[in-house]
Amino acid sequence: MSAIVGLDKGVRTMITATEHCYIVADDRILSSEPIIKGTRTPVRAIVELWRMGVVPEEIPNRLPHLTLAQVFDALSYYSDHQDEINASIERNRIPEELIDPLVKDQ
Image 1 (cartoon, rainbow, N blue to C red):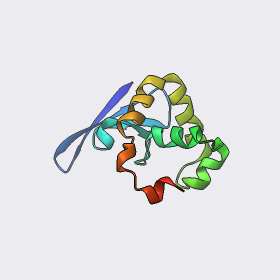
Image 2 (image 1 turned 60 degrees about the horizontal axis):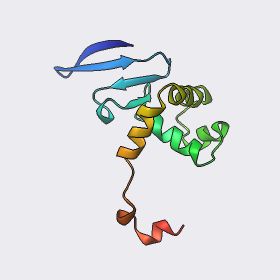
Image 3 (image 1 turned 120 degrees about the horizontal axis):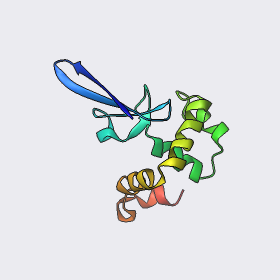
Image 4 (image 1 turned 90 degrees about the horizontal axis):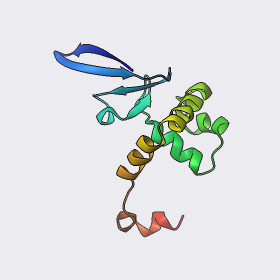
């Protein structure tokens, strides 16, 4: 991993590159959660779609700002970092009791 440090409006920022060309961690976005470079889309969002049965080739139709290469790189990153991404999914899960029944039943 390598870090790129820059100044944004006088504030020091850090973007950490990963061994995956489309995946970075930016300390200004989602508390440095792994995201698709140039977006605010977390790897976990792609993984969750894939777990729901959406095939990788279909994911860019649901997230049109992504390319198929970015989707496959996110899934590859997940394969290499399952514990990290699974923990992120759990941290961001909405508790069952907070989900409106009208939404739950769909």
